[in-house]
Image 1: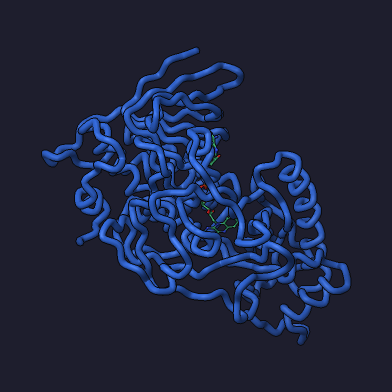
Image 2: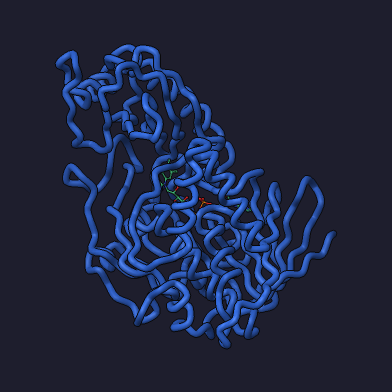
Length: 423
Ligand SMILES: Cc1cc2nc3c(=O)[nH]c(=O)nc-3n(C[C@H](O)[C@H](O)[C@H](O)COP(=O)(O)OP(=O)(O)OC[C@H]3O[C@@H](n4cnc5c(N)ncnc54)[C@H](O)[C@@H]3O)c2cc1C
């Protein structure tokens, strides 16, 4: 076994994990200096970016009032798009940012065990092609999206909606190109009506195709988003319900079903939409996109009611987050809990306590697996909000290692200062 000693170790290099690494590397100490901290980030895939790259997700959604590294990450990715597509740009920019921050990146390395002493995580064990790696640190961050590190450390979690415990469906995102005489057809939501050049209405066409079997019924509508490239669209339409993201066979069967759906959707577009006769898939995710899995139980649990009330918290580390309660129906086609469009909360804050798994003293969670209910998660799971969480979690971890304190002893005002929140 190889022993690797760090100040801070982060599991998961998705939007939250990358922001956490940069937040931890750049945070000022109590004297206003930025000491050199030894930081490692561990990622099971061969590429950084999580949902942004591996699941081919875009655009960045949600808004956050406080300035954080997410703004810089997004801007750099956009600027680099003059050389390549957004997904390719993200791979370059995120790797470069970690490199420049002096963060050690362990790709193709899966976290799979933890050694503990009471509420303290002493080390995490990871696997690189059969070789065991043991990481020690003062502070550990769980940015795995699925809460793997917290659960391996003994944290409790919840999954799914109240009652039947179903989670949101999984999907394969893809892009198509080859639209001829592009007349700007877009379809961003269930109420986005467009009359096509042949006089037919696009959403009506989608619904009829689902009813006739030309499209799978779970698709409901074929969402088409603009990209920076003329004649290209991002397609967010495949959907498989009743998948358990913690069951390997369930997830792998979904991969098969969704790849078949991609073909059906492209055939539908070719056969029904003027100008789309020759469209082809030019890119897709490398792994099935999981919207929702574990939600770690923390000192505070965010609820949808908090979001609708725009609740304020003294220990807020994300300020005025905003995104609709976007629940892709766990039990069938379309959206759940909508009146045509998803419900819109008030701008809301996220408290630091929602990052602290109950019973664990030196582990912080950030990203889509923080402590919240099914409906609140449907809003804060988007990438801009996850990056804002990551930055704050990284700043807290920096204090933990600088001052050898546990996660609940962190001076929250200093974390707020790092992420530009004034309280
Ligand atoms: C189909 C789909 C469409 C979406 N559309 C949008 C959209 O349009 N806009 C938007 O903003 N958001 C969208 N989202 C949501 C968004 O992509 C995610 O919620 C967001 O990426 C979560 O960020 P994260 O860093 O918390 O987790 P993730 O992005 O899931 O990153 C977690 C990382 O941890 C790694 N990891 C997991 N377990 C381990 C382990 N044991 N060891 C090592 N590494 C591990 C993973 O490989 C991954 O790289 C969509 C999601 C899906 C699935």
